[in-house]
Image (cartoon, rainbow, N blue to C red; front, side, top):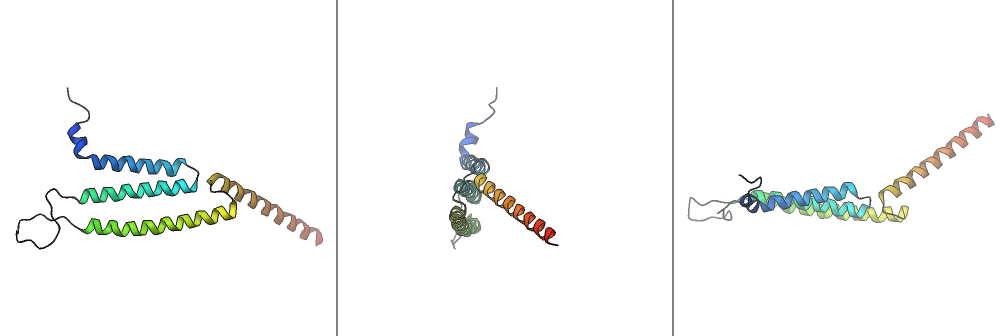
Length: 144
């Protein structure tokens, strides 16, 4: 009788399993939580899992750094994924800083960082503004 999951397969691909777990956790936090700060944390988890995936895929067993070695049969690891991830980390930090600054401004403007409360306040403001415009239109129609 064969097992559905081979323990050797799971052990040798542990980094991919961790990638899937981190990605799904980050996605769940983004979708299920209404707090804007928690959404940013979820996006950062999601982003970290993608970084881990790219770095895991770039690893070559027995590969060395791409520097000049006298052995012509040496296997080199490509530095490109690592460079791309460094760039992505810088962009991610800047995006996170911008998101946190926006959350601070939202908190100053609305007094909350809960998504549903912000939307409710916006709806109430737009309904009040529509009512004021209707009242102005009625006054103008009466004046004519």
